[in-house]
Length: 311
Ligand SMILES: [Zn+2]
Image (cartoon, rainbow, N blue to C red; front, top):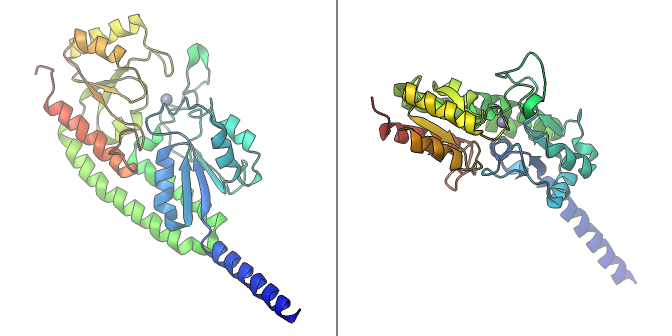
């Protein structure tokens, strides 16, 4: 009997020990809508976070198939990070509600809407979904400006500290390292783009305005007549005429748009199609938020130095 009690005590002690070890190394489970939010969360959270992005980098962030496995991830999350506005409106709220996770409801530390306080571009004076516009609260593609990436990181930091204050020192150190790296890379990126200021480009969807402003491009028009509305024959004719009359050298496409409309324009003009990525993971070599800008800037410069357009 005494021996049995000793075993019980040992087992109980071991259980407490394992639980203590487990909680010491328990990671904050973070679910993000986009891979760039996941990448930035990983930089700020370091070893203390376990991050999962619902959308993949090659998917259109406006349209993602809601899978049951995403609900399971959300139901177990300590933190949910979203771009907000109407970027993920068609798919995220449905998943979010189905998760029934009280830890990540709006108004809690676990709910991070990065658009709150974010300086936005193209905010309309009136909001209307007339003709299917999907940018009615302003342009939601703000993560494509690395300087705004620092604001994203700061917001994520604030919420991580609220959820996990004991690791505040680590989060603060990681945030500073992220900001320093952005500052350092911005100098490099801006220097590389300096010779190409005001280069006129056509884009498929209106998702490059923050990138355009940061790096000095000039987006003249879009294949979509309105954000979310597929290119119409009349829009393509208009674009072809603009490209011809202004000798526009580049057409920016994204992995999730068909190449057929860009090819119609390219066949009728001297424009060069350059596929870029709007998100981390859009192409295999884009492993993180910094790779995203390295990739896009190198592709733009490469395309412009081998441009089809005559001078
Ligand atoms: Zn959009």
